[in-house]
Image: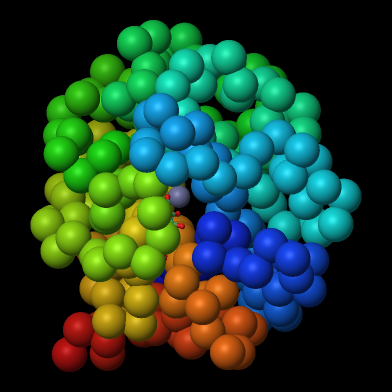
Length: 224
Ligand code: DX5
Ligand code: ZN
């Protein structure tokens, strides 16, 4: 059973309010906000003022994915702007445990993201203090890329590890999520499917959220 977090990276920014309302009418409860600084990833997207505007315009849970260097300098500002979930990259955090604690202390859920080449073992020491683990299923920086199939096994292994250790964090997958893999990902243990182009690139945004959610809630059928 997984839910969809539509990524506004693929939205029409000139029509953002209306497109978000459509995603919400399709059943979305959260909104994925991709923040890129042109350093940690080779692209620049949006930042704190946009989160501030979103927080005024919607009740959806703002799920901010910080693809930035030095995320410790910005996490609190995103929370103050309205982010309810803040995810930082393991690769950008030499003092990961401290930052995760600060995110929680400031009232948001604390997430940590792993690039495709970063092993799960890099999180061994912090799994007890995270609310969310984001498995990148593309190399971060751009929407519209193809899902990396090895991500599926990574989700399975993380899900097994969570079960054995009795942790409660949620598992999120981001990149190339579509009707082709939503069921398999949910079945593998994913709780939140981030979807950009497969939602905001669709003619019927609400219908795309509904279709992905339905697929993610019938994993056995989808993989048959
Ligand atoms: C990529 C971003 C993703 C992106 C996903 O670096 O983190 O959230 O928006 O887009 P799609 O769903 O098009 O792969
Ligand atoms: Zn993202």
